[in-house]
Image 1 (cartoon, rainbow, N blue to C red):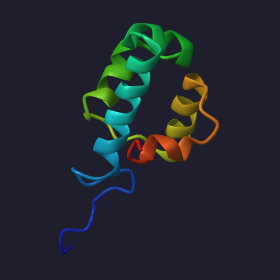
Image 2 (tube, helix red, strand yellow; image 1 turned 90 degrees about the vertical axis):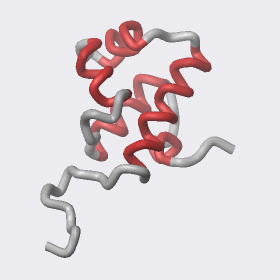
Image 3 (tube, helix red, strand yellow; image 1 turned 45 degrees about the horizontal axis):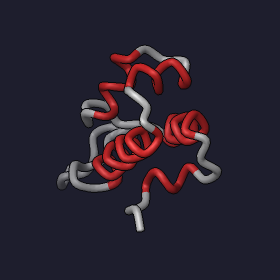
Image 4 (cartoon, rainbow, N blue to C red; image 1 turned 180 degrees about the vertical axis):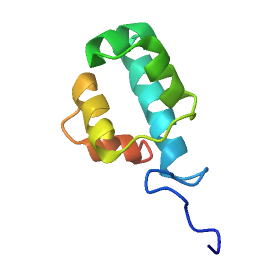
Length: 84
């Protein structure tokens, strides 16, 4: 398949996927929240959150929105942008 992605939900390493992980960790740090605290706000298990923050899982757009909402962010796209 010429290096094409095999699943619709896969993101190539080094792109938005890693940026998402980094941005969520930055937002948690800025708020002084642990992964466990964030997981509670998100309504998910700490292991669920850990899998995304360690880049083991690829979030879909709906989940990016859920993370942003739990962080109190108005625009989910901010989790996919470099911090300025």
